[in-house]
Image (cartoon, rainbow, N blue to C red):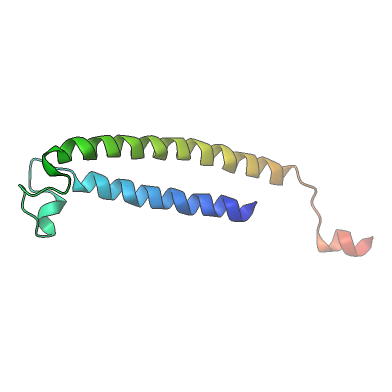
Length: 97
């Protein structure tokens, strides 16, 4: 169970990094991140509709990010409650029996 939890957190962090990258790739009033990699502002990866594709992709990534935030929050809360209600077995308790 803990492997799945930490694997999900790793995927969440990957979505976070990917979302930041996609946001920085979008056109701004200045040159943006594309110019820092040597790209011309007239060049585009997806043709003339680059702004529309990136806006839609950013919206979908933001939706995945928000849903993942909520699910991980609920999952973390559930894990905290299950550990709080678990019986406290210590070495002293086990050795005395």
